[in-house]
Picture 1 (tube, helix red, strand yellow):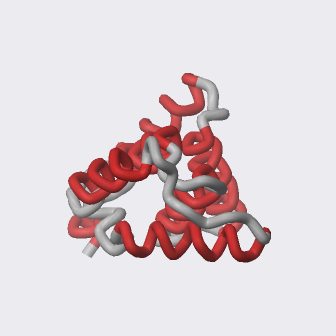
Picture 2 (cartoon, helix red, strand yellow):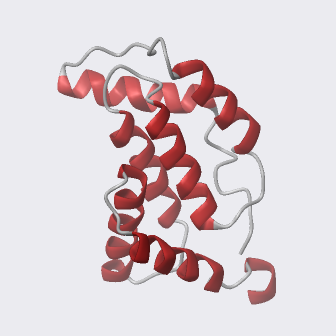
Picture 3 (cartoon, one colour):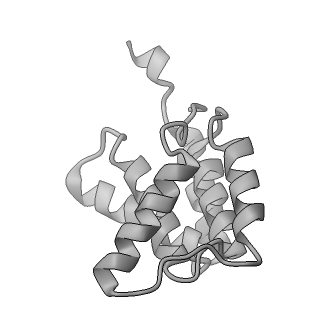
Length: 132
């Protein structure tokens, strides 16, 4: 199902999520000099758009790779991707697995075959409008 998965996650919310992670770990929270502006522009351009779940997770991966913050880029964007899974009507065990899967994709540790399987899972989700 295509939908605006990330619409509620403004760039200000991304910054706040990173700040909270950094504070919790006693790490410096600050924008990076190289990737912050590129990531902000990419996020602001794409986050409100309707997309497949795998595309939303991939946007999180792309922003993680741009390293917009000095610390905890992966944790910040993986947390957002995992949050999206909470919106799916899944049993607890399956939801845990899918959240972990999305986190690995964002972190860049998923194999190509795993990423393709996640894409297939994403494209198989029923459209919310059709379920009503």
